[in-house]
Image (tube, rainbow, N blue to C red; front, side, top):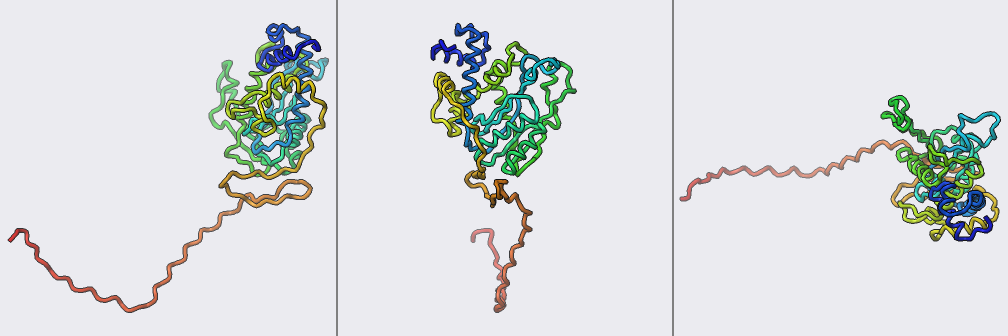
Length: 352
């Protein structure tokens, strides 16, 4: 791998981030499979360090989180007691800013409480404002968000129920029920339940499956090692944030979030990742209140001691309507004059 030129490394990475498998990348670039895998591991580790340094101090008003499923070597139902612990399900936790489309935090591992707590803790450490946070109904999120944000969050769970009984054919798993489909549950703070949604992060899951071959369903491009799987995710996140122009915002998510000034090229990303040194993870900073849009009503708020959040005025009972004061009576005066008597007038229908 060390003998590859900068142009060859860029060609290999360009194929990988566009959804090509390892075998197809070897055929398109003429690079051997061991060299492609070695480059993926090195660039993936560098992209993880690059993300750790660049994506911090993010101002985010609305954040959405979700977990996307994949597996390593074999599916969970086929894992035996003698298999390594990394075999089976490999979930990728993704936290994204809805406005800038920036992937703020991610983590690859089992879908358990330990990884959920670590993911939410990393997400909290990269934010500077109190967010509106929306997730699915995964139960460990509640304790993880409560312990990491300590009151500085407006959190709502959005649960979608898919019907498994209405249809019996092969597409029954994708058939949504008719009533009810979405259930929204406020958990912490004062979330905007009316606009609570996980649609943006679910659309991001589709982007991941399109651009990482290892996430494609019903194919043989799945990961055989957890290290390769993590490297592929780290490479995709760095490329998505820094290099890919998003169609809805007409720039890269990093530029929209204010942490990058230009569109990165693939050679620039590869060189920066390979040269990136180790960096300490971000530490949580005190969160600030969100800035309301122009014209929106503001409520008083006071910061609690020891960084425990804010005391905010949620609302109050509507005041009883006050009846208008009666008009003052006119002062007494002389009685009005009597009306003049009317005089009868005969009208002629014909000219004289």
